[in-house]
Image 1: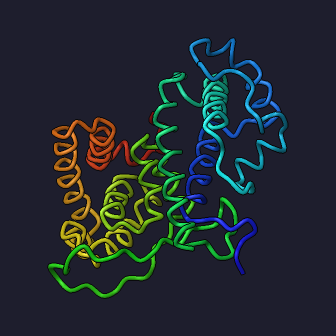
Image 2: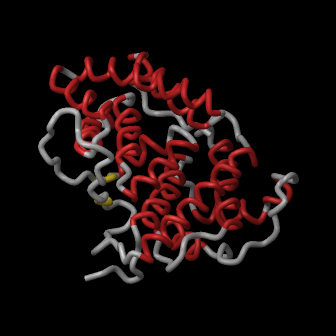
Length: 287
């Protein structure tokens, strides 16, 4: 039985991303969020959209947005205002060291546009989640379409899911990683491989299912993912060494193409995987 309202994977993953961000900013009481929303013009005078936004006038409406129980994704105005409120309260509560202000909003708006575009395409194709269980439930990702014949035969892996743990690990790594989380809704094997790199760079338990993402990407013909999957068979340390090399290669390619967000992401992955002290700590929020 389809959900009511029916949701696509892109819709659900965008909601999960926003919900996880709320949790990572200290899960402030919604009454405090509501009061902060009313103070945005004073707190952020450089925020052009600081006027009232429909749908943010009550704790109930905010809760529905964070739980994804509306038929549609949040509006651009709602999203920007919520992010600013979360950031301000997280700084007040010393959850984050610095409030980045409006500098994060452009990335969030790009993510919302991307999620809406994917959502519309998945609606057009009739690709809906059956029996979605809310923001805590894993989202089963589609089986990736082969890019090419795998360089080495792999058994067809089990379908992979984006769980709360994976979403947490990705949303802490910044703008590009949040985009990866939403784009997994397409089953793009290249995206699944990049998710595997992010997960293996993180501490346990985030690293435990990197192998599953690599297996799905490798079965679809991503040769580097096949190599990563085979490295796991030797040991997690060997897989991590290979992942660092791949992350550095992708960081260099991103820098050459001018994609600063992607370069920062791959650089962080390599840095975390190289530094055992960093891996042993909970991921810190990145813009």
